[in-house]
Image 1 (cartoon, rainbow, N blue to C red):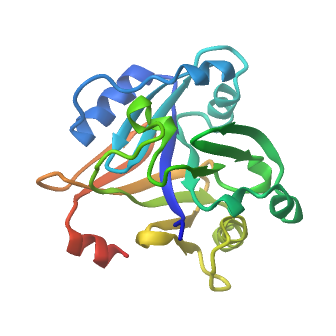
Image 2 (cartoon, rainbow, N blue to C red; image 1 turned 30 degrees about the horizontal axis):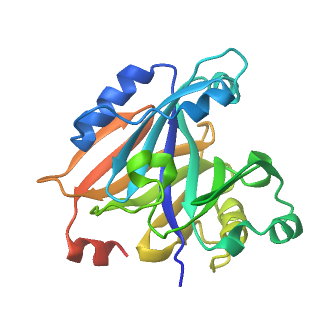
Length: 245
């Protein structure tokens, strides 16, 4: 059975090089990050770093008038722009999304992945991308090494916190879109493998992802603010993963 999980956290900034350097230091990443030429279609440049089985991407506007550039202007600074989830094909079914009133603003269908972006006004908090992959575990957006194959990797994203005006209402909306059960009034969703989406009161902050936790094979906890998002890295251990679930 296909699982539903967070696969990619996307951060937006005007200072691509500076924020990527901070992210590399936090993750202990060596070598050059993957640069996806495809984002140039949207007037953007990026850098993609793997974090266990998952991905953290940093985006920056290249051209005036890009959607990311306008988003940065509206919020007055950097922040968590998008989340991408990997799930069963039925999650992307157009009829299901139409019934839910979720408009599709972008779609890419490739042999190893189908990618659907939903209109932000129909979601709440951040731009949401729904993906389904073949084979399971692969993730084209991480670069050639992950295209059509799933390299061995340990750890990954464990939680993301999203600032919104009405946490319970937005959590219920995400539960519909992700086809997950939720308790009325709850401001959290649990995905497979214990990953958590936490919706927090914005309290004057612009909407967007504001924090994330990762579990990775590092010797000790570490943290940093990257593109306005507080990233917390905990040492990966099988028992830790069970507790966090």
